[in-house]
Length: 384
Image (cartoon, rainbow, N blue to C red; front, side):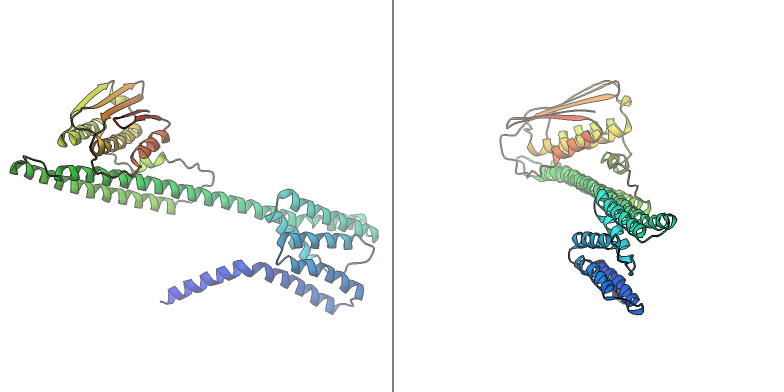
């Protein structure tokens, strides 16, 4: 309970400081200048000059950049005049640094240079030695350098935050796709196996119940593995510092989060087994050596085959064969699937995530997907 109260107090202090730090700094600087003027032998003209800068300084609390620009302009005119300026330039240094840090670079630098030039001109009019003029003017570069340093840090922070946002978005995209594929693939098979059929014998019913049990256990294992993999990714991202220059590419998800077991032959056998258990006929043709396909492409192809089989189970007509052609040549892979659409409503809802997931996976590795879908047939062709 005590820690929760402390965390709430710290959060409140952070919000309060973020909101009121600027007014406190402005009032503090002007209050110190006011105390200096009280302790010195200040004339009415000098008080008037201080008030002339004080008004736009206080105005900057409400209108930041406009008030700071007016204050710098008034100060430049005053220091370039023959009348001596007794109050310090603390607020002007702060104003120049703030403008360099939060406004376009040319604006902040122009204001800083303008104030420095007018200040040097005023010292020359007052008869100061040239060495003193150059020495004093060198200090006018300090707020410009500090302001640009803060601006550079802010840009790096924004780039880092944007990269983190893109990483989280890619991870969320990957998570939603994997959950959709795993759950949808298993539930569609369970729904088909558990649907009533005329002439179903007791032995066939027991076999289907066994298959349903195996599919349910398989789905639970896939969800468990997916959660463990995502937790591992989260720990890796939280432990390693984010590199602002690191490109965000969603293709790395498949090499990290896909299961490493099995190969392309297992994926094809699983594809055929799923369709055959549900009463589909498969025309499968393979050309080329499967060993030439890289591991990353195998992982992506396995996920695509599973999603294709899910769509076939949901919408295809089991009275027509499903065609699957796989050709491998020089490390490139071409996959072609075609099936007829069932004329009857199967009752399975569409999430519009299946084809989008296939396209996302393939294009992440530089491949292409071509679809020809109408009310009678589905044709999907992909190249990796």
